[in-house]
Image (cartoon, rainbow, N blue to C red; front, side, top):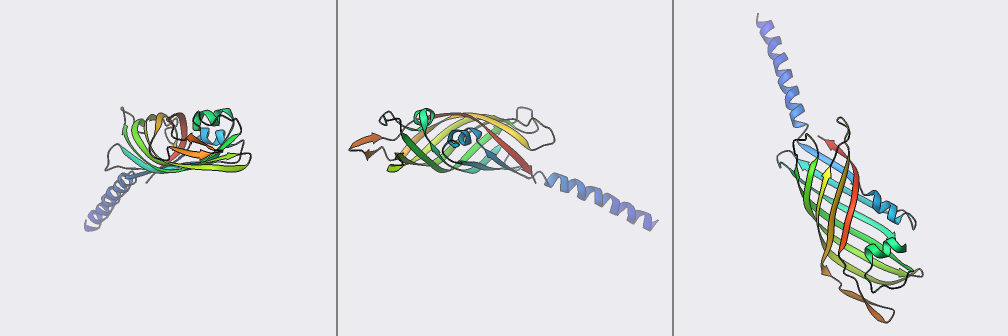
Length: 205
């Protein structure tokens, strides 16, 4: 009888421990994501880089935060329209865009087990290196705030793959207003609307 009770006790302890492990395994989620649009915009010049590393803790219900970094050279009509102000009138500008940042978001589940509506803000440092005819002509650095709204969607129930379309606007708050290039001043601060979709993978622990 004592042996039977002992076996049952160990069995119940094993079930309880296993359930606890399963619950504990969901305490932390780590996401690694990138912006395919950034890669596409810089590919014609060289291979660019764009990555986000984001974290969610179960105890901090709904909060998501992370770090981001990016680097790439932009040129052509799209690069000029996105980055340069109207003071850069010539068509042969190439702009190296480097940056680091933090992002803080709150997620509304909307009845979903994973994903949902995201609202938040990015705090970014942008560095722009202005090149013309393969010569560096100037440099501008900005501290930028980027309000954003998006939706994290997991198309597969059992996979960590997700798509995160979002929109926002980069608002330069501090930094170089203008720089002196080719014997004239060029304004460097510019509101930059962002509409894109990130691709990522979420790992749960």
